[in-house]
Amino acid sequence: MITEVAASVISSLRYCGGVVGRSLRRPQETDTIVLMAIHPIVVYGEPVLHRRAEKITEFDDDLVELVKDMHETLDASNGVGLAAPQIGVGKSIFVFDADDDYGVRHRGTFVNPVLIASKVPDTRPDPDDETEGCLSVPSLDFPLKRADRVTVNGFDESGAPVTLSADGWFARIMQHEYDHLQGTLYVDRLDKRWSKKWKKAQEAHSYNQPGLSWMPGVDPDPFGH
Image (cartoon, rainbow, N blue to C red; front, side):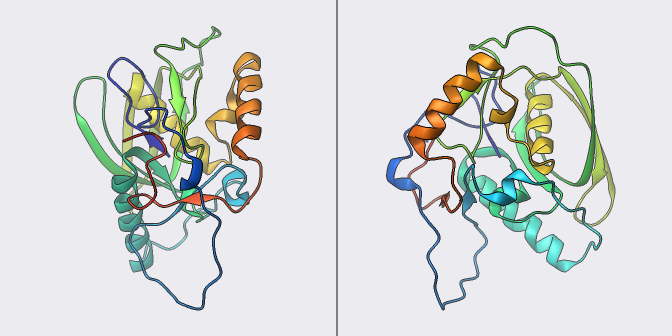
């Protein structure tokens, strides 16, 4: 998942650099079955985030309900993109809701997406314009170089074909969410300089073990909204 950035800062998440602290929780065992539309967002270290998502083979009512839950979770998280592995579901789905560089709002779903991207520029990322964050790496953000243009092909929750071409900020969102379905988080792609900073922050926040999550709309927003 990804958050909406301030106009001057391009990111794949709505982040404000808030502190997570006590907002992280470990799942508790319970005998009570709770049905909810908003799901906890799992944090870096949870195994489902680090393996390739499975393709959807049945476009049924369960899929429609899952996509609906993902959109509600995205709305509650103040994010602009959310992949199914981020709510603990290892399926090839992501949802998005964000403005592009031209002020046009896009809200939609990709099931079993295929992404085609332009070449990633061989230059250092600009900390002012190319900073990225992730709902599954709460309260942190780092610069990352991305392709300028992408085209994504896939299906919506009903099985209808969907195609979207994007550039700039919106292309960043598409790449970020597509990466989640490959078992890759943006921090796994950082260059040497920023990877060192990430490793220090990872240790400080204990983002190196399974079992952490946070609940949008209940826990304090880790990005300060």
